[in-house]
View 1 (tube, rainbow, N blue to C red):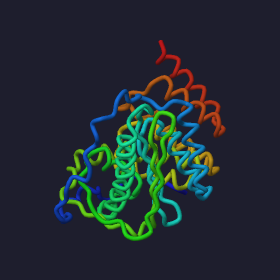
View 2: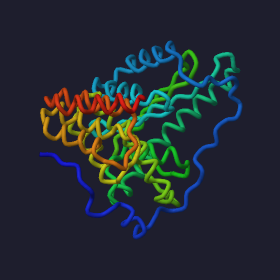
View 3: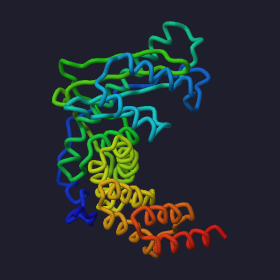
Length: 300
C-alpha cells in the first residue's frame, strides 16, 4: 500500500554541503520593444498553437504531455516535458502582428533562446536531485520562476521550431537529456527555492493525472507532503483522486480524512464539499454526509 509520510531527512539539510557551479552570466535580456502585449492567450491563439504543434509530427505521447501541462497551467509562458529520454521546452510570448519584420524576427529569436534556457534549467536539476528534490521538470520550472543565471552547453542534436501565431510567438526546442550540460554560479536560497518548487510540483502532478499517469502523479503528491508544502490544500484531495483511480479506496479515504481532521487547517466550503464527493465515491456515505453538513456550515 502506498503511503504518504514525512521524510527521514529534508533536502535542505544536504544543501549546505554541496558545492556549486562555475561562474555564470546572464543568458538573455528581454527586448523592450513589444507593443500592446495581451495579458492572456486568446482562444483562437490556443487553437493555432494546437494546430502548429500537431503539424510538427511529434510523438503522440509528447503532444499529450504538452497539452496536459498547458491545460493545467494555462497562464504559464513556458512548459517543460521529459519524454523518452528527450527534453522538450515550449515557450510563448504575446505580441502584436503589426510590427516591423526585423523586430518580429528578433522576438522569435528571443523566445527560442528562452526555450533553450529552459533546457539548461532542466539540466541544472541534476544537482537538486542529489539533494533530495525528485522531479526535474518541477525543479526547472521553479528555477525559471526565481532567476535567469544558468548557463551551459547544448551538444549536437538540438532541434528547434518557431512560428508567429495570431497573438503570440511560439518556440519549441528539444534535445536528448544526456546532451545538455549546465553550470550554475549561485543557487537561490532554500527559503526561496522550496516554495517555488512546491508551486511547480502541483501543476506537474495534475498534468500527469490528466494524462492518466496516476502512479507518477501520486509520487509528486507524496513529495509535496514530505516537503510539508502548505498550499494548495487541494493536493490532499488530488492524491485521494489518484488512490481512487488506482482502486485503492481505503487510502483515498485516509487522505480525505487526514485533511478533514486536521484542526490547524482553514478549509473552505468548496474543499470540504469536494472531500464529501470523494468519500461518497469511495463508498463511505455516512462520512460523506458529515462532510456535506460541514460544508454547508462553512457557507453560512
